[in-house]
Image 1 (cartoon, one colour):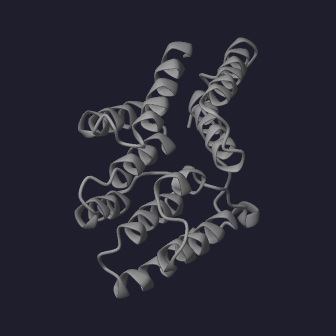
Image 2 (cartoon, rainbow, N blue to C red):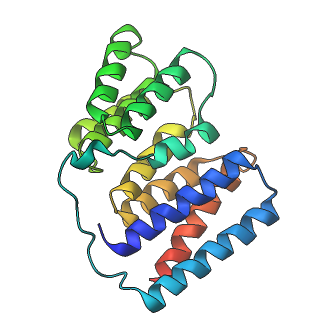
Length: 209
């Protein structure tokens, strides 16, 4: 994964984290976004963003990390209830460097609830984490299953598929998926502005790079 991709992932995760924790107004978020973009510009000036990242050995210290799914899911999915609790557990396993346990946990509950959009989205994320960030056919299938069982016009399956593309460094895939979702989103949908903000950040990143 290139330095540019890593920087963009960090930027999106930072904006999502601030939005969740502080819930600032739109103007404040724009200021935060501008500051992050300024930081990316400084990185481009002083660093070497075109150099590829250096992967660490598998299970080195068994250190995990929060995924973009974990950072953003509370803005798009229910935060209470049984399914939400299972996502919390799966996120904890991934954070602790045990994505295989996250996959096992979600698989067990999907046997009981095969029509849960939330659990299928969590499974897609867990499978991607287990594959070191790659959107494998199994992970893609999980996102497709989430879309198949989702309530009508629910944006989460397509949004998180785009986020999965972004997490593995496929900027074009993320952009195309989100633009397709935006084209189908009603003008009065409460998530429309949030989606447009993500696309704006991607476009600014493109120009910066």
